[in-house]
Image 1: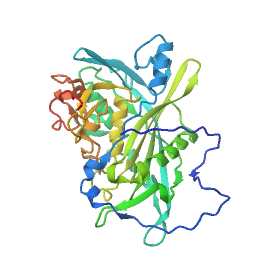
Image 2: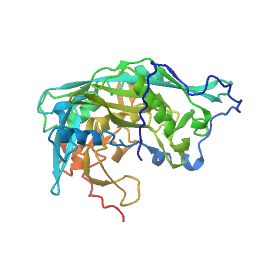
Image 3: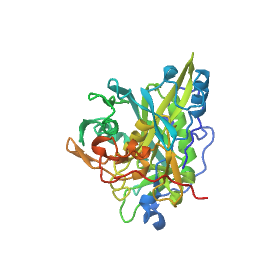
Length: 404
């Protein structure tokens, strides 16, 4: 499932309230609504309904043009000498006579450690057309879990197999266990936390649900509405291309027409070209993910699992351009193939509970690069194909052949 941005050209000042109704007209009174039970057909197949959206390769055409101008033809691997973005490095692997280039976050594992600057933007969602039992508008406010997010293994060190460190750093060190300097690390700086942005969500662009009998309410927004709001936020906020931007919501998901019957998404990662300064191409990386309350989805996908999915994939494919030999999409019909380095997708939703400072978090288990490479034996940490739990993928997949 693809997600598309439509960047808006804005000349407005920064606003902490994004509402697109007309101030000159009084809206017609509308009946107020309350959250409704999630349809039984959806609730009974919840794990298969939850999705993580793929990058849309928005930077590909600009990267190809940039490479051509730099004398590097016929490749989407960026010529890094003229790119302004977060620290990245490029390598490649071969399989069945074909070369698969990739670009990842950080400095090359044969060099020195790196740290990437980060920004965290909490987004508060207000639903004026939905009320609680007391008649108050529903609000989904992530500001109360900002501290817990920063204290999680995304930014704070935890004890992982083979190392103590942040989640992304641990995954990358496991991947390049036999290909990196001993002191190599790939860390995120503590985020610069921006003021919360408040978004008012019209009733036509959202539905509120709960899982019976007593699940906490969650929202499903229309994908295009969230696309527009997020694009505006990224245009107006004070962010830089050398920063990884994380947009944080709570218990909010998206689906076309706000209809979860065919699936709903909990997050995505993306990169987009913001411009060119002299000969330098500027590329802004970002991710959106929801913190999921333990009572929202029957304990599934809880707390930082969506964010860890996207952060892990962003480390491995920051521009959404890394190809791999096709593999079978888990849970899909045979012959449904995927061919990008989305390390969260093969085990989407599988948690690895870990305790940090007395609090338990649920980062997701990821497939390692060696699984996609079909490298036998694996040269990752302990010869593994998945991390932090090595028992989930014990051998590479066969090459997927698309059903005709």
